[in-house]
Image (cartoon, rainbow, N blue to C red; front, side):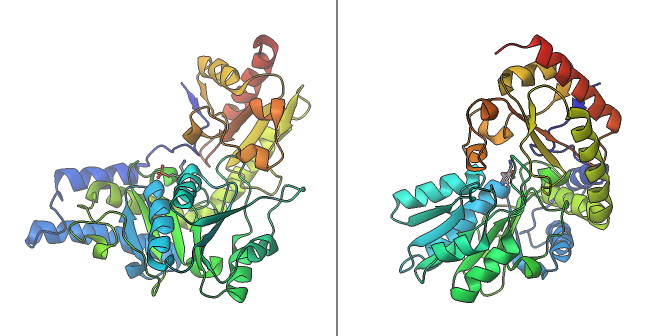
Length: 376
Ligand code: PMP
């Protein structure tokens, strides 16, 4: 039996998601664009998922567009907004700890002539809304800030930041990558003040290869993928009905338990931290008030990858830093003041409400054994 503690990388699809995907592959397999009954049924399945996701965000269904994942949603947000508004407004402001799908896209836009301002946390490791507002001016077309950092679980002050930016520059479009917050913390489009929100199916017990973007009414976005004008022309390509149906089913199942699961996961985080406290050279990198779903620690003097493979040999799966960076340091930990040997020894443990205390005990024991056995 393995112990899977890498839920920020991906989650196990829930039964409802698998069943919805299977139904859309075995029975409801029409193309939503077809004009006959099979097409209509497929379109209804897509629209059902759209309504579920819209409701969870407190949004209207017409604001939800399906994509191939949050990487595409983030690309669409940055490229789509700079495409629509960037002719005379050449500046974009992003946090310095964004996922690669925002950070790399911003760097690409920089090469194409946009000015990118990357706002870092202050000395205390915290982000301040005022720093983002100060980085903006009347030429800023977009501010992009994630809700929960995928490496540390740090919760960024999105609501305060977007409010501060809009107060001074109401024309600036706001985008929030909510991938690691959705179905874990309350995520409402209105409360966040976000004009655009990116979501991913496989982080909420759906299936890989589907995501969504919320686009507030009235916001213009230049499409990245052009073609048959599916998703009202915002994202062409035949909709993946099975993956979309699975995404909707997963969201429907998780939505009523966001608060209860948060409580449970907070208890689990505390349990793990209690087990780790007092262990030699183990430091906690996640903030106390971060998302309890992500716990980043460092074993100073033991390289992440070596420790990761030692744990793997015991059937325990965790991540070094972030799974997306495949062992390469993304620089995000450094932004939070975690450097050198401490960064080299970083491990990310990411849990769900189904994780058990016994699994966390098993991890803690294996880690302790590893600290004794592993060199380098
Ligand atoms: N943003 C964040 C914060 C993420 O953690 C991830 C997944 N690692 C993504 C975006 C990309 O999502 P997807 O895998 O759906 O492309």
